[in-house]
Length: 437
Image (cartoon, rainbow, N blue to C red; front, side):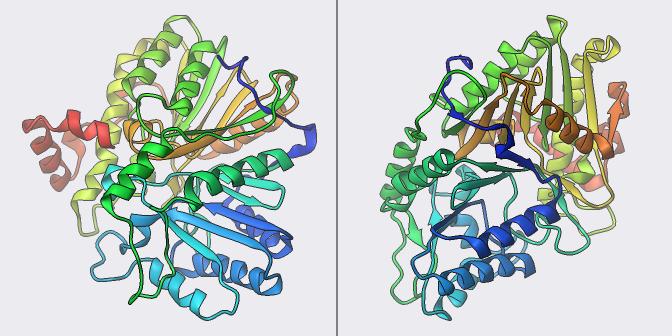
């Protein structure tokens, strides 16, 4: 499948690895300031905090300098219109968007995309910052922790791809399937006249998005990059590419995921890969590096049980594949760096194929969220050294597991967590939860 997959030709010097969140912020602000014709941003959210306001201020300033600059910012509709988890009242990010847009002469488009009628049923998880003829691709959203504004950071991957055709393709997909859709609404509308999408419009948008794709002029030979978009369980091209990367790998896989809860079809492909004597390195965040982790000394809420559920999923997988660890075929690396968090996603196969994406390797991403990714096929191994250096950087704060017993059990968890997980097990709700987590 992958060898027949068309892609956009890339020159050897077309890719840049940024490696750190601070480097991502610097690159974004510099490119925004120097933009000449267009800026298209897609992210889960743009937060009302210091880093978020700095980014939106840069966008506003660029628009005032050049009123013809085409600026589109797309975020998840539901995420933008609610406060942070635990915050009550009307405190969504859209209030900030409305405020800053009202204060300038030349407005920018900040649009909310309702992939589903409720946030828990699916979100806009599309990624990519397209500025002129370059694409800055990362799983990061835009706020303090993703851009390392203060003392904490959320570790992700950050790549800059210089390609006129890739940038055009990503802009046109956003324009065709999102900007022009009746269900996608402005998040800067005045309160007394705002129009919100109806349930029928959202449902209709979902159906159209399952058919979305990037259009480009490509090739099936040489070094190339393929933009891929996917939504839904049945015809999701991105999911199929990930499975194909595992099935077609001849030697080794390097996989990054913050939450370990692979869909059944992927878990089966990984197990088959190991049984054939091929190697897998998996880098996953320690439960304390999960963005939902609540330290024991802080007040507990139900959402804090999620990291422990993911950890138990990892323990179950490692225990089942302990034989592969013993033979050196499976290497599981737990990432932890102080109180920072881990958000890396992606798959590399045989040092020649690399998927950079914001999509989690879990049932929710594979069935509910609108996801995308960029598949790099490095037939000439032009970028092999750079990807190996990136992997070394990723493993800098990771500890390798040698036995499943190194992962804690329910007995070791705080009392509130034990109570919730026992209740879930008693109600036999774990099967349902795994499908939406």
